Length: 221
Image 1 (tube, rainbow, N blue to C red):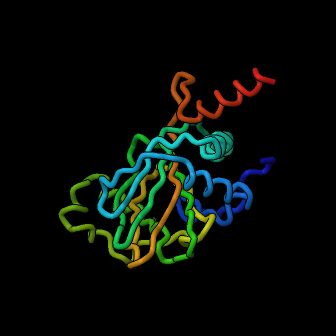
Image 2: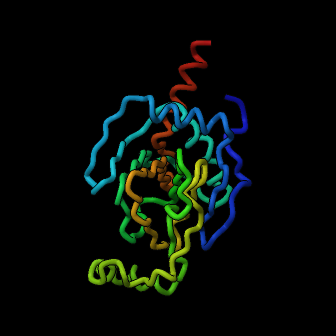
């Protein structure tokens, strides 16, 4: 597939460090990604209620997409990053994500929705109230004590709808509570989720699979 792989300009800043993505991948890349994720044998687990997860995805399209994003992320957020995790989420009926922060281990999270049926209301919801986010960060147990209701529903913003080829990029500073609504009966919510960490001592992450493949191809030419 030739350049471009994605439309970096198709983003809207919704809050501090969080960007909504619209028609992000070019059509051929989006179709190739969906086909690869669904056709490549992988191992799934259901450690989360009604959510099936495939970990450690290193298939070619995913890894090349992640690697191609690295210089854009570096320019946008001023750091040097590598890919730390790549997962597929398949949320089944009644599945939802409890209000939570992204782990401090991650500098940036990227989620791309792989919808077959657009369900706009199922997009990820972020709390952009810095005061409330700081209170939760200072007292993490408050969310469990209040069963997730410490932050009022009115404070959550669905920054991007759950529609095909939409998603978000979340820079993890400042940290922002986010959640999802339950998936309706008979529907699913499928997505690709990538996490990036700050590179230390020139270490490489999962994108090493991509660069390794390129080197092998060059040696064979």
